[in-house]
View 1 (cartoon, rainbow, N blue to C red):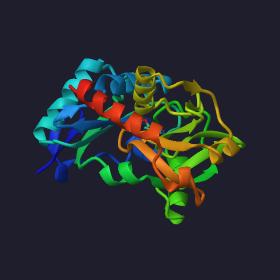
View 2 (cartoon, rainbow, N blue to C red):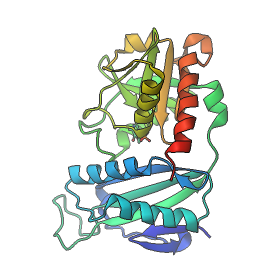
View 3 (tube, rainbow, N blue to C red):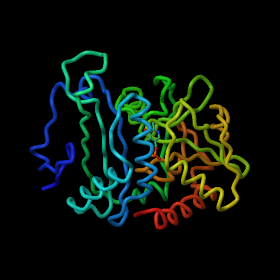
Length: 282
Ligand SMILES: *Cc1c(COP(=O)(O)O)cnc(C)c1O
């Protein structure tokens, strides 16, 4: 039976329970990460846990863990559940305390929970591309924090599903920000454009790997916000995340991108991404 990690204990999944007073449950008061496992190894795990600790710090949550300690916990769980290809979800909440908006006393300890999932890479979608819609970004102004509060993201994704699409590309007014659970990159005249890293987007690690690949291959990587009109005129559109990797978008709001075919720069980035999987998994 699969094990779940709760506060450093590996527990049978059927016995893994958290309190009804957990602040993650009542307030969404916590942060999370999702880390990919390829061939029993953790991909860009250092980058993920550095971001995890940053997210925690930004909400005033002191986790008292080093990146290395978190990697060790994660490794134990992956080994115990024998995950070859899949991922690890890990979250930390501000702990269990009577419901009150203000932070609890300092003797209330964070609750750390992690579980694994086993699955293959999304080969078919990576080859054929997916459909996306656009939708207004209604989220808060600290989208740089990987917070458990995902209502805006959940509603955006559900809007996509309603239109038979797999991702919702969000925009604040005319400015494209990011997907419901992905970053958005657009290719125009041989250059890649994507929103700069600030409080309006989550600083994606897949986005970062794409930037490394672009630098390797001499493809200009322009970190400037693009408009919804620019998106509609793009040569290629990509959404990126730990789970969908370098995912081509072949239709936006029902209109084809690049005649519905996966473009050459997207393919080049996918190949480069595969090289990084091999060099950055430990
Ligand atoms: C996690 C996430 C991403 C993608 O980040 P990766 O590190 O590439 O997985 C993008 N946008 C949002 C809103 C996210 O939560």
